Length: 399
Image (cartoon, rainbow, N blue to C red; front, side, top):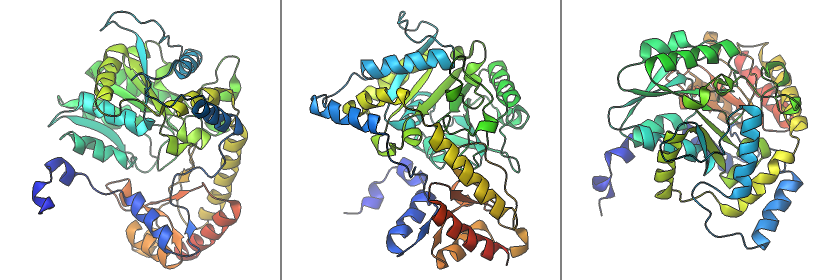
């Protein structure tokens, strides 16, 4: 059968992930130095693993409600009220104002639900360039258009850069902080200005905060009263009245090393969450039930020592790479995004090919950007592996 003849325009519009292509190489290259994938390299905390086992053994393995299991929703509600000052517990009537919350199948699941809810053919979403590799696919799946906002060389998504790109077809601006692939954390003024712009233009501001727990100490601009340990990066959601204008998307995978569990949540305007919940009923149905019960235990686990360890790795890698190229300091996440030195006269894709010849795997910037000038290095590796990788990179960039 000629399957190609049957394919939809939607399937044809979605490009394969450049990250996965590099990851596939890892399985074929013996002894590869793999600095490509954003997969945390620490063990899942015992309390969370035990809670998952308990839930399975207690036969909590069936469907949950579409919005999520009670214990996890209660834990998220409590944290959102502490962290953002939002009260999501009041049910209200359908279509009422205020904030509401939905447990999702990962942050990617939340983003897909958002796109399916707001985007139609010809609509637009604005994202900072460089961007997470999923974002172009979100638009393509809906017949919409992703508008890339150039943020080079500092990787800050600012209102001044975004405003000229807003049109009558713009549905939302997507902010990611800390960023992937850059790790850059937005300043408080940046997020305040973005929210003000979106309010004036009647556009939703979406804050993808998958790495909010992975913010390094010097960049934690918003401490939480009575719980400074869980201070995060500046978020537009902490500004007055933001629950009417901001959708926050967060998850558990990166923070607690449970990426395969596919657990996240979306919290924001009640009318929007109601529509996303409706789409969820016919797509994901619900997030994995026993793992939802386990995630409720995550809020009692201190991950600061892990994050501090990644900050130390960042400092080590920056010290090595800055001797041979330009690198913007990441304020969070676990990536660095160096520039391929112009003196080499090659693109990042060509540079990565040279890395592969040395059995080093990093991701070319083209996987995250309309430019092909930088490459992403993951810090999710041991000091020894990072050291070997930096030795190869410095050798190649030194020419």
